[in-house]
Image 1 (cartoon, rainbow, N blue to C red):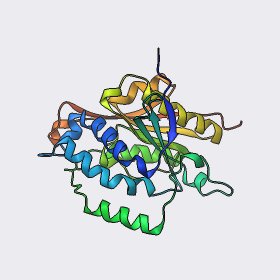
Image 2 (spheres, rainbow, N blue to C red):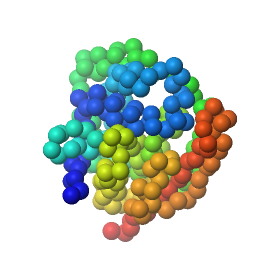
Image 3 (spheres, rainbow, N blue to C red):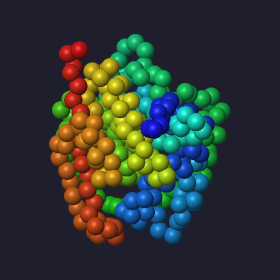
Image 4 (tube, helix red, strand yellow):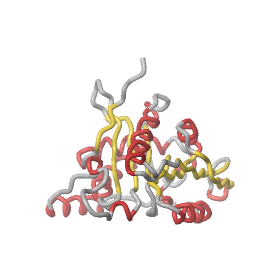
Length: 249
C-alpha cells in the first residue's frame, strides 16, 4: 500500500530535521561531496542546522516552503522550496500561497538566529564556472515569461534568485527515496501554479529528472560538462524544464 504523505508548511522549528534531510540527500551525489573535502556528513548537517532558520526567514515575499511528513510517525521525509515571480509576490491583496510562507519571528529571535548562522562553518569548495552556461540559459527562459521556479538536487552555486515561479530546492532523504515523496512535493507546487495561472520552471539534475518528466514537464535545454574539470566523477549534467499552465482560466 502506498503511503499518503502529508504535505505541510514549514516553520523555523523544522531546522534540525531539514538539515538532516537535505544534506543527506545531497551527500549521495559524488560531485557535491567534493565541495566538502575533509568534512563528514554529520559535521555538514550540524553546521547546516545552525543556518537553516536564517535561510527560511529570508526573502519571505517570494519564497514558499513545504515539507513532506510521514502520517504515522510525524517525521519529516522531504522538503521543497519554491520561488514566486516577483511581480506576483508584489501584487495587491493578500500574499499568494500564504500558507507556505514562513511565519515571521520577533526582532530578538531574528537577531539570535543571525548570530548562530554567522558562527556556523560554511566554506564549501566551489565548482567555479560550472553553472555559468546553465544559469545564462535559465535567465533567458525566465525573462520570456513569469514562472514559479525551483531546482532539484540543488548545488550551492545555483542558489541565485529567479524571476519566475519555480521549484528552488527539492530534497528527499536517501532512506526515503523511491517512495513517491518528491513526486508529491512537486505536485503540490504544480497545483498552486495552476491556481495562480503561471507556469513552472525547473533546473534539475539527473537524480531527479524522471520525477519531472513523469509529471508532464518538458525539457527545453540541457548542459552536460566533464565533471573531472572540478575533480568530480563522470559528467555534470543540468536539465532545464518547464510545465505550462492554461493562463486563460
